[in-house]
Length: 293
Image (cartoon, rainbow, N blue to C red; front, top):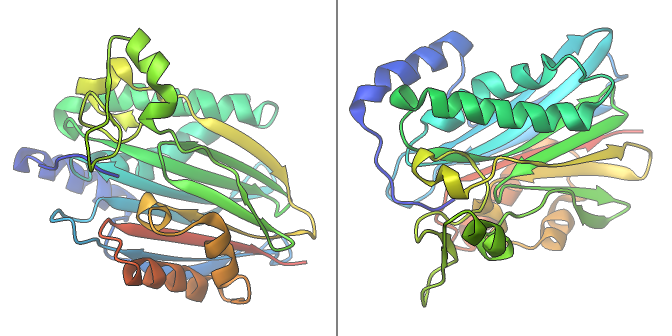
């Protein structure tokens, strides 16, 4: 995700407190895997993150964990792609799923609850901009309930792609500025398209929806696209990845590349390695969630 980068040192202490409290950061665990325990081991996952060569520190964060809530096993997965520093994606890593699961209507109206939690989380980020700074982040999240139900949400250009019987199905929506130009202009902003560059909101940000970004918030949206999918025997796996992968690889190419790789960690690493081979310079983060039986 592209924007000019600078993270003031005065915010480092606040950010480190978040990381320490949650035992998470973007670099200590850049690869790994795991599996569900209660859902008859139907869900296994692997992840791999690679710092890009864009001249700034790693700004991608991820979540890949399982929780047990109200008698259900939840697989929680996310990719957060930051810009103007890593404060906002780190905050999202620590708080977004808690905010979603704390929505009182989550079990009755999960789609509405996820959308509401995204918006409320964005509000909290803006309220804490003194500590978190002016930056922002895209997000793609996936919640797997008991290995049978999948809820995918996103804002920005990080993407979720499902493989069903070998077919690549994009579950997320790339929120590109040109596709939301009318809304942005109606809100007083503008979209630039300069030769050799991608469309940008107010000449700065290459996505139309994101968390944070206080200076652009009047023209950005934090409303997510949310999609629900029933997981049956036809669903093989899901890829979550930042745009560092999708800039150089089509959905069908990604699915074909790893469909025969049964170990999801190996699959995630294969995708990031291929993106590097195709000269992607952005941070590249990838999670592969595989369903069995």
